[in-house]
Image (cartoon, rainbow, N blue to C red; front, side, top):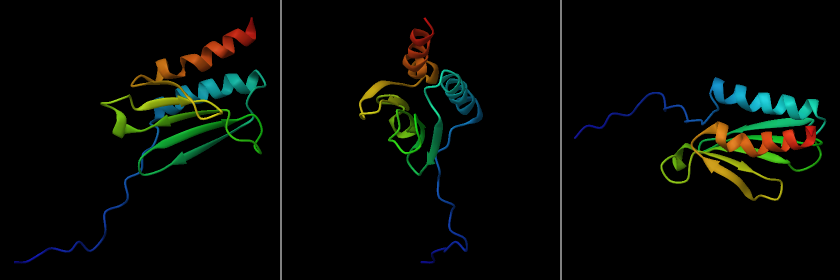
Length: 111
């Protein structure tokens, strides 16, 4: 029996936000910055999930996190909106629906 050994190992799989997802998230971020609520953000791209974190100040823990976990697509939904204390605010397969509570918060502040 012969076994084939690859010369170059396969590159590690990395989960990322695609252009449309990142555009929608950055629209929310821009509106929150304009309202004076958020000042900084961070992206964490890993093997099993991608996380966008928004901060009031860069020295604090994130006020809001948008998590993309494709492994949960068929169960709970691949997107999650997570609050400052770690509670899951919304989960689903539609990014628009998951970001809706953050947009509603922005509308309440404008009133």
